[in-house]
Image (cartoon, rainbow, N blue to C red; front, side):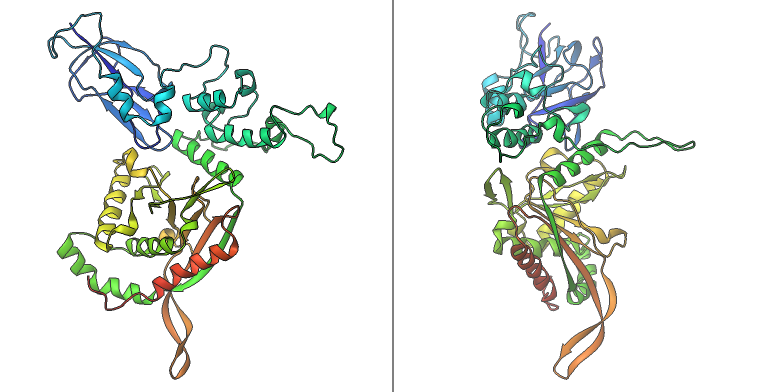
Length: 438
């Protein structure tokens, strides 16, 4: 019989490892071609890996909850006569050069690394690669607090540590031998860890363990607040024209294009236009470098059936017309509701919007989706009396009004830029052409 090595597949842009959450099959089981073998998870979505061949599972190389690099062999399948004959002792697998060609550069360099036997916890290939480049020993890694699952050290944890490390020179500073009287005291990462409040549990209280995704969301939110000094600006917007236009054309749009037209694609269209005019909002921060993104990829926060949140991404939103944006919004929303999103659907976002008005909220202060530098909150659209200017003077009229909120990273987006950007989005929405053709 021939042996086939099943490897951890490429999982999307920038994904170099995944956690094995459940083996659907066990050693000795028969598996058919395309039958699910194992369930895996990244920090973004869950997936199944099907078997590319039919056969019997000879060996499973990783346990559940193990973190495995892309390209690593995870199981061996005996195939019988399914493929051309080869030595039974020589497993058949894809050309490693071809595998490497499909992987991110970082994964190519570190794919064959294993956890150090001296380490008390797992370190991902990416973390170990950074540590090696920065000449950080395993002993030093062990002292750095981690915010990942089971206190794992994430890339962001290590990069934050390096900023502190280099701020005081290579290595740590011994406070007892500091020679500069005016120097600020250096606090180790362990000492700098935020204290946790003691929670008292009373009789009858229900304790609910967070699921994996909720833990990831919690860590991501806490990490974002620690990383970016958040500032939020608000603006009230008169969206009467676009609401009336949508009411006028939505039935025609549905019958002609087969797509339901909501307000979300219109908001995305306006944001994409404003981002082209203010490219410093379509950016990320890397240390003291600002990375201005070429592509405008707008994420839209969506609720999953279990109540958790995910952010599918409309790629190159500025290059799509309203129909194109609408089709993509509807596809991604439907995939999110049915747990059908794949890794590419949620990768590469450069700016995010979140619809706070879905449940009636007037506005809110959303948390930035790292490593982006801003997020737009969309409040509920409500009719209200407002003062409007006319040729005959000021008048009170009933208008469709809403509040936009923009949270931004004050390290690189100042109040002036944040204010101009949100004002521009408001202008685009307020000047919506009531006679626009579908």
